[in-house]
Length: 289
Image (tube, rainbow, N blue to C red):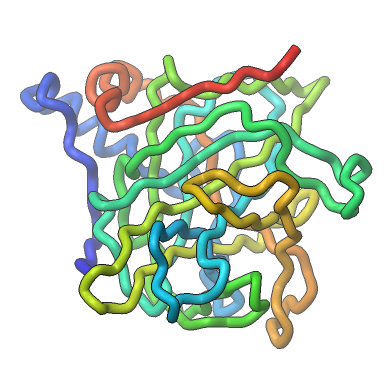
């Protein structure tokens, strides 16, 4: 698979000639520490960092790890009623067998919270799906190089290594973005679910598998994982806690995952409505009232 240091999805034909807009789009499609954000859990770039399997392969080969089709989720707190127009995540590929970002799709969804006190299993987990998008990354780049390990939570084992930490950026048109409801006086807990749709290997080569990077910034409860028979569709109640495996320096502790949710960039607002609609398949789910 081709390795790309930096990749940006091209703008639609309607704005190809708008050089200034295109430049603004490229700049705002990325995110760096220190820039404005609603929620930040930075990736663990030390030797303690793991990548947790979060891929869907339509027809996995018999040699692939069992329960290969997994979706992960982590919780975050909303204290301002505004829209989620940017989502940034970090991850790596098992044994650095990568997929060109142009060939990738991700499932991103936002869910309500089921608190631990309301779950018979004793941990909090995603509840009703409130919003989702199936989309390719707007841009991607190699964020860092580090010698890290790739974790399959079903087996509880390290199944390989990786060295390239990818940052994937998703810019969502404001008209299609999820409107958060929390305030400082009445905060709301949401969950972000992520799963990569990985092309199936058809040439006898090792199957690429993507993992979501861990974060050392812990908030609230553990991240969770579930299994999917269809892309992005976990079984009802099929959630388990994510904890560091045996032998890890943080053995038994809660796993959190690396993501950033940012405000809508001003310079991007005009471009988003024109250039990205063709790249995003988005549906909204409204809460039952």
